Image (tube, rainbow, N blue to C red; front, side, top):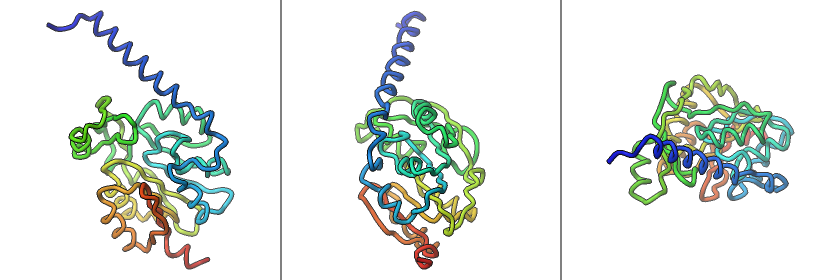
Length: 235
């Protein structure tokens, strides 16, 4: 028997209440004074190759604005950039705690438009990849909901940079890392440093980056840090 409109409304209100309660608990106020914000200290390693007091970054799949962030330490030092994330709760937290950044609610893709997005708990598992979603389902990951999100084409990101400039590209997008890196390379983007989550495509990503004169300088087991050879040779 179908549920009544009243029951459906109550269920929807309960889901919305639980959603915002969850994000309220994600408040990073207690974390703001830490010396490192990345999951395994990757941001401290990044400072070795990005020592400037000011610079820029493109953070694709930015996630939480502080906790587990590879760019927040740079933000605290005075850097500013663009953060992209499709989860509305994260978007709100970025607006509250990283007012200096440009914030895009959506995902990076090969083309502009609308894409299916599969949100999981924890949110780090969330993905636009149908294949990755199936893998997560089979593994027993906690699925939250499916909905449409805006996709911004790589060519529209305007990531025009070269190794001489203090610029970080940080990528954490389950199942789409390789296509996005490939797309950025094809449009001529050459960030000095690329921090990318280790994924099933990490061998292909490493081969692609090494072919374009990037060198693997550090791996935490979660993220790998690549630095362009031109910058390394200039030191």
